[in-house]
Structures are given as structure tokens and as C-alpha cells.
Image 1 (cartoon, rainbow, N blue to C red):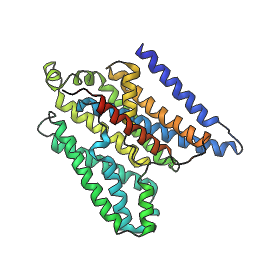
Image 2: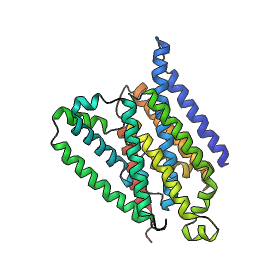
Image 3: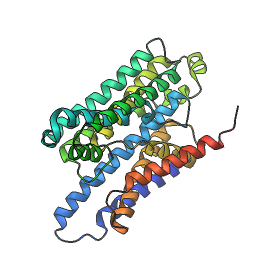
Image 4: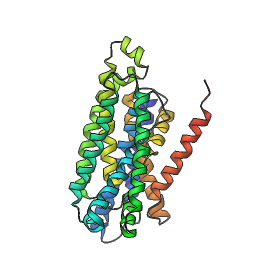
Length: 314
């Protein structure tokens, strides 16, 4: 049954992608189709990376109410944008080569996340909650520093920071997208290889170690994959904090199985489907250009509150 539902998700994603590409396609067909293919690929990459990373993160954290963004990825990204504009000015920032900027941001995000995970979990992976709380505090600190720096920017420079701090799928370079796609495929392949071990890890640290699983090593490897996927997607289009929570929650509810070999591709497909279908509705049907990220964050925030409020008290 779960396998059949996974195939249904794949079919729905293919249908949404075909509709996104073919709807109201007019001359010049090749030019317009090329733009749509690039945007579609960006939507799929970001949605798949965010959905899969959230499932992995929730498993090692033992909590389905959190997302990787809670440890400060979005705050670090905004801080990097602010510091670049502050150091280079608006013109210097705009003249940065796209590929070099993408690689720099992705590398900073990955290195910061791996350093956070490695330092806080060096004595073992049993204190993931301490790592999450530290990430939350660092995120608040980075937001405060970014807010302070933004106050001394010129209005035009502040507008550049604001524009680059929100997710945008309209201006993704193909070279950056190709690199992000390759890295995502590698990370997803690694996650799928870990799927049987993640099924055991979901039982809890004590039970997993009793069954012979090297739990600490698995957590560090899994968090490294999470860092890579979230860093690449964030550097590509910007932060989308609650998309992963939507995708992971829907994947658990739709499949009704704890098997990560099915949950990981399902969350990836649902994350991509949310973005592709949402972009199609707002861009093709409603003729809006920049509301998708806001709507996804709003819906994800409502889902988070719903999950928190309906959770039974201990």
C-alpha cells in the first residue's frame, strides 16, 4: 500500500511538472520553455532537498515538530547577505560572479553547520536537544547582528539585502542549478543507503545501540547530509523554513509507514510537488510573481502551531 502511494506521488509530480511546462505555451516556444525548465528544476531541487533533509533531521532529533531551519540556517544566510553588502556596497555585491557567490555561501553554511554538530556532539550523539537549543540561540544572535548591520546601510543597499533574504525562484542560474542538482543527488543517494539504519535509529538511542547500531556515527553522518542539502538549497534560492515541515508531515500522514526507504523519496516528492503546484497556481493562474514563499511559510507556520497544540501533554 505504501509503495503504491509513493508511485501516486511520483505520478502527481510528473503531471504537475508537465502542466507547469505546457500551460499556455506560446511563441517563442524554445525560449519560454527554456526559462520554464530552469525554474521547474530549481523548484524540484529545493523542494526535494528540504523535504528529505527534514525527515532525516526529525529522525535523529526524535521529534517531528522541528525542521533543520530551527538551528539557524536562515539566520546565517541573511547574516552573510548583510555582511557582503556592508563590505562590498550595493554595486560590489551586484557585480559578484554568481557561481562564486553560490559556492561561497554554500560552503559557509555547510562548514558552520558541521562545526556546530561536531563541537556539540563530540562526546556522543545523545544530546541532540542541546545542539538544537544552541542553534536556536546562535540564530537569534545572528539575526540581531544582521539587524544591527542593516540599520547602518544605505536605503538602496538595505533593499538589496531584503530582496536577497527571501526565497526567489525566478532568477536561478543554470550553472549553479547544475551544481546544486549534482550535490542533491549525491546527498539523497547517501540518505537512501542509510535508510535501514535510520529505521533502527528511530527507535531511540538506547534501543538502537542495544541492537548493535553505531548510533553516534550515524547521527553525525546524517546531520552532515542534512547540512549539505539545506545549505545547497538555501544558497540557491534563499531560506524556506517551514517547507520541510509541511513535506515531512504530509509524507508521514500519506504513507503511514516508518520506513525511511519510502519516507525519504516521499518527502522529496511532496516538497517538490508543493513548490511546483504552488508556483503554477500563483504564476500561471493568478498571475502573481512573488507570493509562493510567503504562502508556504504561512501554511507551514500554521501546521507547526497545530502540531504543537494537538500534542498531548505528558
